[in-house]
Structures are given as structure tokens and as C-alpha cells.
Length: 339
Length: 262
Ligand SMILES: Cc1cc2nc3c(=O)[nH]c(=O)nc-3n(C[C@H](O)[C@H](O)[C@H](O)COP(=O)(O)OP(=O)(O)OC[C@H]3O[C@@H](n4cnc5c(N)ncnc54)[C@H](O)[C@@H]3O)c2cc1C
Ligand SMILES: Nc1ncnc2c1ncn2[C@@H]1O[C@H](COP(=O)(O)O)[C@@H](O)[C@H]1O
Image (cartoon, rainbow over the protein chains, first blue to last red):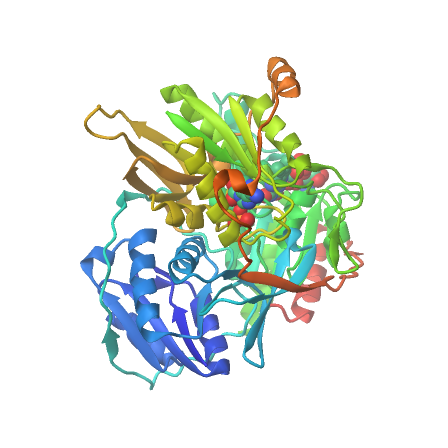
């Protein structure tokens, strides 16, 4: 089987699930890494290191910024001429669009956010969560090529072999410019929850520390935000000791404590870390659907009856403002000792 | 400004969804407008308020989906269309996109078609981009903010959106007509007003069979072989206690380290 693997990146920074997709492709036969952008020589080398048999590179200043139409047209033209059996993507906001449009161009279908993929005879059978993960479906695509996006962390990441390298095959770009990228607002830091092995999340509880006295002159809402900042600082410190990312409940996002890109749950991100620590989060169903497939869930909440404890393996009934910093200290000691 | 909001009807997110004889069952849980599509209706109404015009809610689904359309009407949509046909037994996203594109054309086109981010049931999050591709219109996905720039008779109106992406926010512009999908940052969906509910309850929603939009039922390209109930995870929570936060933290850290997840 011949597989294209689309290497998704933002200004050269790769979504690591792209390499996981490359590993899946290799298990079926040959894997061609497809890379679009400009100035991406280093990325070509990395693709070979992760096991690509060839690299198909469209390097063009017109592709500096991702634009769905231009990228999809370039990919469709490439797939039409080289006829892969399968095109794999890591599931990201960009690749959902790209896979969607490429499927229309090639008159085939897309299997989105796949968590298992097998080849039976000449058919790819994909497993994917539906109804917010309440069910799984096994699905096939009768079109050719089969297009699938793979959920981050659902497949093993291949080992990187620094001795590998190779030259890229140049690909022609199809500039189809229906949209113009005007720029970015860079106020927010990059949050990569989908790929995180550890997530420490804060909820409405992070603003609930009456004993903290905010600076004078703040009104009630400002004082709440100030308290939430202190709370999220503690959450962030624990995340950083564990090498993890910071998540949030919707109540925390709606409260203005933290940007939307951190939100876990139905209207936020679905995440599958190895460790998820929920601090001051009650555990509403819309939050649980976003994190219940984490390997290990730990909950810290004042309220012993909070539903989050039903999802958690370990729990602490207590004040997060006391427990979280203590946990950070404990890990500092223990992880420091181990190293 | 002519605006269309595409909405679907889905089982409520609190529903206990199960596999029963190979079919999805949600018992007697209520069917509701897909929560993401409430944001689509909200985004559409905001644009109507900013630029004038009309909002039409569009849905492909069974007769019961009229209730979801009525919710959109109650929120303030001007009219609604249901595409429904007994021949539509299984519809994949490509099929849905082709039908939506045909229905949009039959409505008489639009300046802007607004989608939700994804459905709660299938959850693919790709129908908007596929519809845009079928129509040949620009796709502005995951918009947290929409701005329409003034146009003149000779030059079409332009649109600019702030896309909420993993890496922050990307500002993208295009000419109308365009397809947009929206996320939560667009603003909380408004509650139906009393007047809106009254209007919606009296509304007669036109139902278009496939023959009306000039298509036959699209053959699904992706199809389900099997439904699987995910292995249930029986977690019992062990509550860690101790004399002081430091002692609790110490015990908890040991437990976590013993699980070898770090
Ligand atoms: C359509 C729809 C979509 C939604 N999507 C999402 C989504 O994507 N993600 C999401 O998270 N929610 C979502 N929600 C909202 C969800 O229903 C809940 O309202 C939300 O998750 C509650 O957030 P929370 O747990 O932080 O706040 P709360 O429910 O208010 O819980 C706060 C918790 O903090 C505890 N606490 C307070 N102070 C402390 C302290 N000092 N120390 C320790 N614990 C403390 C309290 O005991 C309480 O359990 C959605 C809702 C709807 C209707
Ligand atoms: N049957 C349908 N009728 C109308 N709109 C739909 C339908 N299915 C999907 N959509 C729209 O497409 C979006 C994405 O759907 P999906 O790709 O299935 O996740 C939804 O949020 C709706 O706006």
C-alpha cells in the first residue's frame, strides 16, 4: 500500500501527531511525507528521520501561511498524479478542512479523528468515537484514496533516527486564493492540549480563595479575575513541574480567567493525556466528554460530592490553594531525586 | 445581507447513548438543536443586526427536525427550510455537503452561510469545508469574530474573520459570498424571546423533498460496519487524606508516580 502522510505544521513547528501518522503509514507499506510551506529544509530531514520513504515538498513563498483552498488544491493535484491508496493526516483544525476539501476534489470520503486503523484484505477499517465518545464506530470508505485524520496520541510515535536523511521531491503548487491571511494576533501563547501527556486544569474554583486580599481599588469582577490569576499561577506551576499543559473548564474561560484555547470539553478540546489533574472543576458532563479518556484522572475539589470524583482514580477533598502548591513542592522533590 | 445558518438536530448531550441491535439508541432523551449550531444561529443573527437582511435556518433531517428549526426561528431567524426525504436513509458528510449546496442554490444563494463547528453525533467537523468546496466559495473556518466591510455596487462586500486556531488567532479575509464556521467565542446564543417562541410555534416550515433540489439520494462513500460500546472504565476513587496539605501532597505524588504515567 502506498500512503501519503500530510505533515501538519505551523510556521515550521510540526504537530507531533504527524509522526504518529507516519508510523501508521509505514505499517501498511510505503510512506510519502507531504510537506507544504516555505523554507522547510529542516523539516524534510526530520521526516526522513521519522521513517518517511520519500518527501514530497511544495516549497513556495505563496504557501508561507496556511490557506485551506491553496493547500487543498495542491494536495489534490498531487494525489491525482501519484494515486496513493491512503492519505493520512493528524487531526487538527487545519487538517479537518484540508482533508474535507481534498475529499471533495478527489470524489472520496473522509474518516475523521480515527483512533484505530487496520487493513483487512484491501479495505481500511477505521475506528472512531461518535456521540462525544459515548460510542465507537467501525467505518469504511469506498472511495479511493481513503482519507483519514488520526487522533493525536492514539498511535505510537515512531523512533527518530538522526542518521537518516534524503532529498525532497519538488511538488508544484496550485495557488487558488479565495482567502487572504491578514495576520495573527499573538496575544495568546501556543496551547497544544491534544498532544500533551499531562494536563493540569483549573475551573471556577481557581478564583475562590477568600483569604487572598486583592490590591486596593479593584471592583468585584476585577478582584475575582485577580484571584483567578493567582489560582491559575498555581495550576501553571504544577503543570510546568510535570512538563504538562494547562487546561480549563468552560466556567473558567467564560469568567475571563484564561483564553478559550485552553478549554477542555464539548465546546473546547477533547484530550487524552496520560495524566489529567482537575483543580476546582465540578465535573459537568460537557467537561467530562473532553477528558474522560485520560489514562489517570486526579481531582482536587472542596466538595466531596462533586461528580468529578466519579471519574477520578485519586481525589483530594480540600482547598486547591493549599493542595496544589503542596503537590508542586512534592513533585519538585521527588522528580528531582529521581533524575 | 442574505444569511443562511445550517443546523442539525441531535440527541441532547446528557442522553445515555447506547448501541442496540446495531443501531444507535438514546432512549427517550430529547432531540435538540446541535449545540454548536446555536452559535451558528447566533453568529448569523449578529451579522443581520450589523448589516441588515435576513437569516434562513436550513436543516437536512427527518420531520422531527422541524423542532430544531423552530428553535432557530424562536431565537430570531426569519424563516426556515427542512430538506427531508424518505430516500435519505444514511447520509455521510460528502452527501450532506452536496445536498446543502443544492438547497442553498435553490434558496437563491446567499452572501454568507454560517455553520457550527461540528455535530454532537457524528462529530466530523468537516461539512462546512466540504459545502464551501462544492459551492466553490471561500471557507473561513472556526471564526470567533466576523466583520463585514462595506461594499459598493461595483465591488462586492468583503468579510474578515478572526479564526480561533491552536496557535492563537489568525485574521483572514475574503470576498462574499463565503462559508463560515463559528466557535463559542462568537458569543453566547441568545435565549428565544417570548415573541420569538410565539412566532415559531405558528410557523409553517416548508419541507423540500430531494426532487425539489434536483438531486437523488447521494450514495454514501463512508459507511458504518459496526457499532462498538467503548469498554467501560470502572474507576473507584481513592480519597487521599492526611494531617496537612504537605502530607496529602506527598502521598498523592507517590500514588501518581506509582502509576507510571509521568
Ligand atoms: C452546550 C454546552 C457546552 C458546554 N461545553 C463545555 C466545555 O466544553 N467544557 C466545560 O468545561 N464545560 C462546558 N459546559 C459547561 C458545563 O456544563 C459546566 O457549567 C462547566 O464545566 C462548569 O465549570 P466548573 O466545573 O469550573 O465550575 P463549577 O461547576 O462552578 O464548579 C466549580 C467547582 O470548584 C470547586 N471549588 C470551589 N472553590 C474551590 C477551592 N478553593 N478548592 C477546590 N475546589 C473548589 C467547587 O466545589 C465546584 O465543584 C458546556 C455547557 C453547555 C450547555
Ligand atoms: N443534516 C444537516 N443539516 C444541516 N446542517 C448540517 C447537517 N449536518 C451537518 N450540518 C452542519 O455542518 C456542521 C458540521 O457538521 P459535521 O461535519 O457533521 O461535524 C454542523 O455544525 C452544521 O452546521
